[in-house]
Image 1 (cartoon, rainbow, N blue to C red):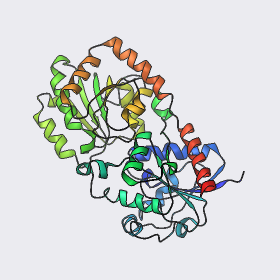
Image 2: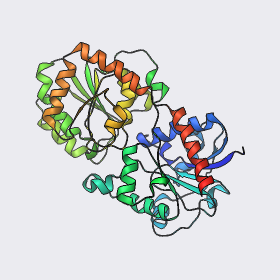
Image 3: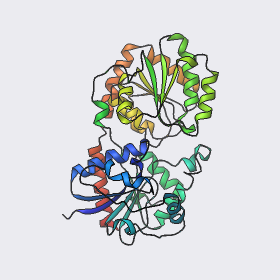
Image 4: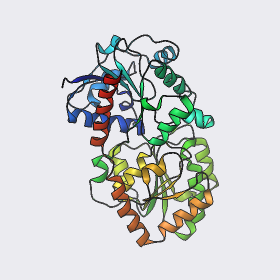
Length: 371
């Protein structure tokens, strides 16, 4: 079987890495290790493209011709030019990993849709992300296949964008071995027991709800801290206001952006991970917490029940009282935490980047065969 020439958008590997970057790193590394593909990568970036090669796994070629992200996205939202071949040369498949797949002269197109926040919850979307549904619709009109990280998002793509169900494919993310490895213990310089929140500070993540819930139970756990790790987003003002209202504000620690190694260390040292998301297309942080043997309190938002199964304590999104009760119940019961840790490891073991890469490779081949 001939090796397929596949060009992958690796832009999310540049800069501060969020969940999309974790997906691209995990999937691309496993795709390269799996063989059978001739992989190359491009970046929608003028200045960052020079650093692209350093972020790629062995065997993946970097295309470093300049690509102006803003101008290209606006153009591709209304026209099917310029084609990806201007940058990559001839390829069989082009995989847009973050809502946008470039048009092509001959290549079959795959676009990853992580969630549909701009359509489901437009008030939780930024101006930069509101163009995403238009880009996906344009790709669908060109005959692109859609990859989603969950069956939940796949159903939404069919329902909200009118996609052909046969061209929408749910392929779950994996869990990094770096998260699982290492000795358990205190996390990356944070002393004492702590509840960890991990993710960008944006309205969709529900962090003001978590601050209020933590404040409600803090008196019962006087040595406990809340540690909030992740890059600043456009929800920083609401988060800061919630902390300002908290009587236990001195015990809320904001550590900002952390790389994957420090995030893994923080996970391994946490008493539990809290993930109070209002809407979620997958949920990597709670799954990684489970892989590390850390109990999870999360919401029922979006794909979280699909990904976390019965291994997490789930509450309705936005219900601060229920979130506080769940935190208190798990924090106060050693046997429950041990049982949740065991169930969480079993659940996380169902997800791997090798499985993700195998299914993506099958999708690439299907796209070529089906047209």
